Image (cartoon, rainbow, N blue to C red):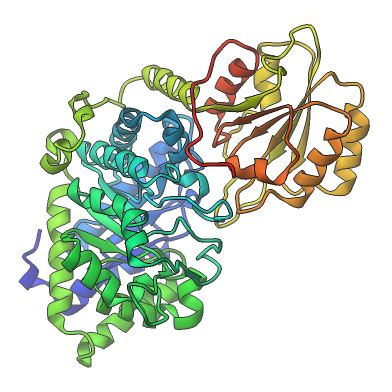
Length: 542
């Protein structure tokens, strides 16, 4: 790796950018960014993934391209949070549970084990950084973007699970990224779409939002991602944390003592791009204290950010010393993580944090059956029966009618799975006489009428609800209301446990926190009485 002083200013500025692209191979966009602009990092999305083998080859190709261009090794990252946020969802990858499912188990050792498994698998693909864990405390039922990505609403529990995840990833040579600093949990607006404010005083922030980040820093977390959220008690000017010197340098660096990499959330999100523009935002983020600037999608914006930072240094708006310090932190990280085998990369600081680090690392190059058994065990420990008025377990002598919502449209907070298993499919393996009606997550009144006509003579009715944003969609609310008039319903919240707040109290209410195939299979055993779940709500349904 080149000494820092041997890098040109253009090469140093390039190291500050992490960029996405739109192909499953090294297309013109990423080739130009690596060869001409010396970008230091790449982020994968589902659009880049055809298979695990293809992604492994792509990682090697990109690293080879950087080496031939005389650049530093790339920092290759992904959002592989688990549960509902999994950019790599091929079946050969272990489908680890999401954060709220893990929070419902009440067992941070499960979180550690999942992070170890996932960390080893990511390393084998050529990925060095996971943009996880989310350590936001989700104490707002209407939060449209965090929700089940959080471990729950209790700061101490979120901190414990966050530390376990950090320890697990970094024990396998993967940089963990605690996000979204100083906290995105108590918001009711998606920062992909607009500006958000957390208005609480500093004392409340210390007790709730900041606690998990303090614990993450103590655990030696490699990176922290910023939130595009305003915190007036820290930064009185109306600017988001990502662009605030008081937040990133004053609070995170100086007061909290964080010495790792500060990475921004994507600057193309509307909370940033609309009021500031990506180029100006990139300059302001560096001025605030960010080391790594994330621009995930558009080549024009990526080039504008690079050229904007370079011009700010050339004109003296940003001193070259600021760039030098940021690149020095990035290079320190790359020496520790990039391109190395993970067998010898155990973080001493992290390994002293949680007793569960005594667990042996999991070798995910072997057949995945042991991992599948682990996921089955965790799922049965997370599924939560909130209440049951005698409708569970299902009566084997009676038929079952299942209403299943399918995710078919990609949004900023939701993606259809490349492979799915519905509850009707899973139940039919255990019980005969299972009928299933599939609906969209935004069912129309006509769809509701068809279901009401079809379900009229059914003795056991299961309605699965699915909310990816803050509110249960109106069509699902209407469907549950109509069915409740003539049926004692079993309602399964497939994602958001807060669905209960927007429907009449059903006969039985069960939370799964995610609709992954592994969880659906376990759920079928729970409903038929083969398993007794032990999950408890990590949030209050008030």
